[in-house]
Length: 423
Image (cartoon, rainbow, N blue to C red; front, side, top):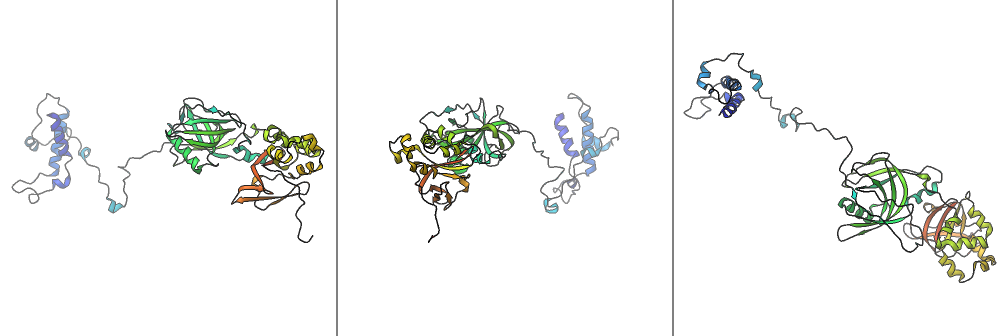
C-alpha cells in the first residue's frame, strides 16, 4: 500500500551512514555490496516527493531501477538536511553527565496554591456537660498571661482544616468533643497522644475552615484549642476532647514533610480577647476556692484590700475549700474571724511579687508578707510532684490581673523565717 511504501522511503532516507559504507567483505557471502549512502537517501527522498502529490488511487510509485537511471531535479527533491539525524550526544563515560540539555525535558516547579489537601468533613462538636471541674484546664493563653500588656509571641501550631461544613467554634474555655475519621488526621492525633504535642496526651491545635480544600493563606482567621485527651476507637477513628482558646490570624503557613499533607502555621493570637480578674475575683468564680476569699474578707480585711487592687503584684498559695474544711471543721466564717491565728494563717499564704511556675526550682525559699518561710520542692525529677512546705500543689500558674495563684491541697501553718545556726 501507499502507507507501507512511504514508511520504506522514510527508512531509506534515514538509513545510517555506517551501514551505507559496508562492502562485500562485511556483507553476506554471495550477495552484492550495499549501495552507497547518497544513492539510498536520494531514492527515499524521491519516493517521498512522488507520494506527497498522489492520492490513494493514483499511479504506482517509480521502481528503484527507474529511480537509479533518472537523476531527480533539485526543484522536486526535498532538501536532504530534512532527513538528517540529530547528532548523538556524548556518552556518559566521556562527558560525565547523565543527561543532555537538548534531549532532556525541563520540569518547571508548580508555584501556585496547593490544592486537594486533606481535610476533616462533617464534624459535629458536642459540648461536655458534667460535674463541675475542681480546677480550670490549663490552655495556651495561660502561659503568656504573665506578659501583661507586652506583646505576645507568635505561636506555631498544627492546623486542623475543615470542609463540607463549618468548623467547631467553642467559646473561651468551653470543653467540647468531636470525632475524626480521616486517616491522615487520625495518624496525627495518635502521634500527639504518644507525646508529639506540647502537652501531655495532646497539645495546642488551630482550627481553620477551608471549603475548597486549598492551602491556608496568610491573614486567614481561626481559633486555638488545647487538646486534653485523645481516645482511639477500634474502628480507626479518634475522639478528641479539647478546650476552646482565643482566636488567631495566620501569619504564614507551610506543609512540612512527614505529616502527609497536614499543615502547620505561625499564628498571631488576639491578645485583647481575654480580660483577667483579680485574685479575689478569681477565687469567687471558682466553687473550690470561694471559702478562701470569704475568710480573707471577714478575718483579714486589710489583706483583702491588697488582693483586690489590680495594680499590685502578689503570689498566693490558695488552699482549696476542702482543705479549709478539714482544718477548721464546721466552724463558721464569723467565728473564725475572731481568732487572730486565722488571720496569721491566711497571711502566711501570700507572697509579695509575682513568682510563676518557671521561676520555681527545687529548694527555693520564698518569704511570705508575715515573714513565714515557704520552701518549694519537687519530689520527682525534674519538675514533678511540686510541693511547698510539704503541701501538694494541685495546680500552678492561675494568672490574675494582680498576680498569680498556685492551688494547694493543705493549709500552711505559720512558722518564723529560717535563720543561721547559732543565732
